[in-house]
Amino acid sequence: MGREVAESCVDGVVMEMVAAYCGRFYASKPELAARRIEAIGFQVGHQLTERYTMERPRFSDHLEAIKFICKDFWSELFKKQIDNLKTNHRGTFVLQDNHFRWLTRVSIDPSVESIDANENDSTSLGDSAAQTTSMLLYFPCGIIRGALTNLGIACSVTADMSNLPACSFVVRIKT
Amino acid sequence: MVVCVAVVGHQNNPLYLQSFTEADDALKLHHVVHCSLDVIDERVNNPKRNSPALNETFLGLLYPTENYKVYGYLTNTKAKFIMVTTDLDVKDADARNFFRKFHAAYVDAVSNPFHVPGKKIASRSFSARVSTIVRSFSSGTTA
Image (cartoon, rainbow over all chains, first blue to last red; front, side):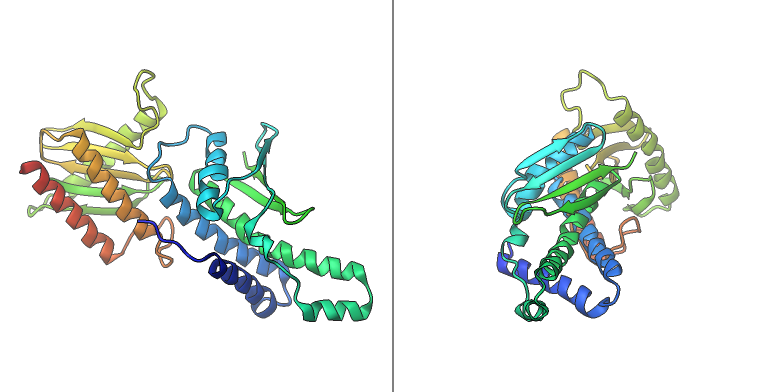
């Protein structure tokens, strides 16, 4: 039984959640907000893997689990696969998505923009944009970490968004 | 007839244990369930090389005792499902089918946002669903 959710609703929920945590609950403590958002993602990923791995044989090694994340898990979430997977064969994997759905419709709040424009400082505008998008990426990072942890792989996940809307997730497996 | 089902977490912590007998033998059944954990470990760590389904979730008959047969199932997330039955001629396909339904119920139970991972499953609807699955399995094999 598959249930679907309109993409715009998911986009809305994710953005609103990030905005609520960053702007309202932990406005003064961005690190704490990031941790909370990551924890929500962790739980989501944890529960989703339980469902998505139901009909498949068990994974024999880490690479197979990562491949599952790249292909099936990503298709279920974003209707596309990860575009590029790199690994150094020593426990670090880079998952690159050239068109990450949750970032394609992101725009900077015009009120923030105008404040920055008044200050006439283009670097601060870039900074706040980067900060907002990086906040948005804590959620998918948490999802990946939750998914892998549930598959028995302890790891840390960070996101890198040097050229939007492409972004890459760096998975470091703890040994 | 299925006399006992159990869900055991990835650290061999019991998540759900339910027996379906009138008699007062719950302790004995729990003992059977816990003994089977060793068999599961052994199966998973030393898989038979020639077996066709190397990493299949359904582990098949774990071991027979005098009165019971114990079947096991290991999910990708290392949760173990154990089923103890008194039927002596259970078809593998039936057991597989049973576990598939059981797994679906488990997934729905742990997807509850109020369920804490690693804690016992206290959901009443999960219990009800498991009872239904157990009953349909029992009636299916005897009919």
